[in-house]
Image (cartoon, rainbow, N blue to C red; front, side, top):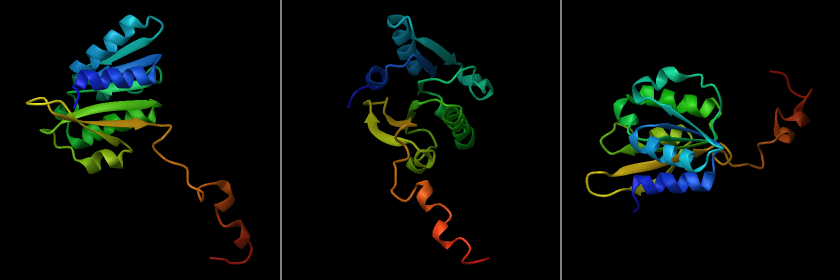
Length: 159
């Protein structure tokens, strides 16, 4: 499959972010290149050593790219980082994690991420996961105000 740089570039091209956040060497290189070619966009780079202490962020971001960071954090701290990015309003997140990290497929699924696949070859193999606030929770017919609290049962049963 493609390289991590190509995957991040494709995600950035499809998202067309006005505000971009990056953490990690590869992610920051792609984000800096995007900001250089799109002067109307802004780029915020988080230092991997201080990523957890950067919150709350001064603004929400359209896209966050992360590489080489989850390998340095425990699953608890990494979940905190991804959760903060997600909860502080980052619309889309793309994160690459190598197979040497302690992360599992279930860790990412539990945070609402989707596995996009394996990227790279040789010694630089990683799994790419993405999160998109617009599509992570698909609409269900029962999940609407018409079915909340069973209004047809009001006044008929007491607990």
